[in-house]
Length: 239
Image 1 (spheres, rainbow, N blue to C red):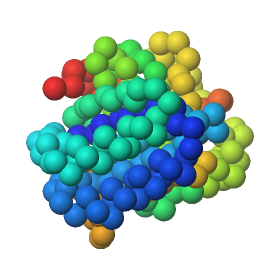
Image 2 (image 1 turned 60 degrees about the vertical axis):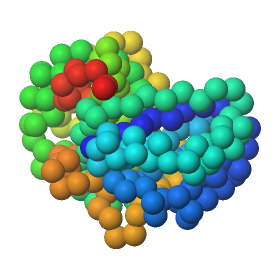
Image 3 (image 1 turned 30 degrees about the vertical axis):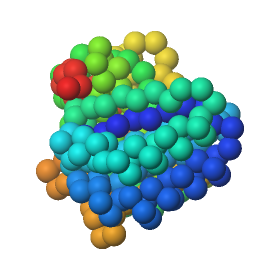
Image 4 (image 1 turned 180 degrees about the horizontal axis):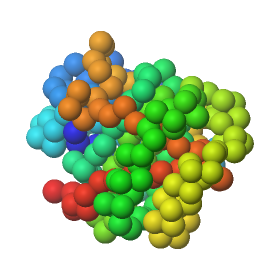
């Protein structure tokens, strides 16, 4: 899978949503390999979108279409300043429900260390974690260069997510979370999307079968989930 992360301040969330609606209705039929888009605007006006393709080649083909250029030329005007783009083919998807039906999405961005150790920790007690946080229906973890990451966590609703974060994990789970948290470099940034815009081709899966996993994300403190999954990824720079 290949994901492009787009971010920037927008003064009018509804105008941006209208632009994405138009892309989905008018341009997505010609975007072969497009798997879906998760987008939204935070309370302070930060727009963030994760655009998923089945390969980098498919994303490049879409980018080269004249109609895509025209659409972006208009959409770029909706940002208060420049939008930023980060591409990656170092992506891990976990689904235990249907992320396209999520009522709340939290995006975490930061930097981590020791992905191999994190991978070992994440693989432990997956069934127990799934039972502990049934409000988490999926996640998409994207590794950027230099150990940076973006991770989107999909919840059934914000209310259930807040309830889940208040639960006290058993001692063994707490120990796992503490070690996972120690792998963070600094404090991650959290972007809460209370009204997520979830787009996908008709009847398409959220991710190719080979990219999907069934392990559940985990809860801790400020973050509605712990276990920033990018730690479980190889540190490859995006092409």
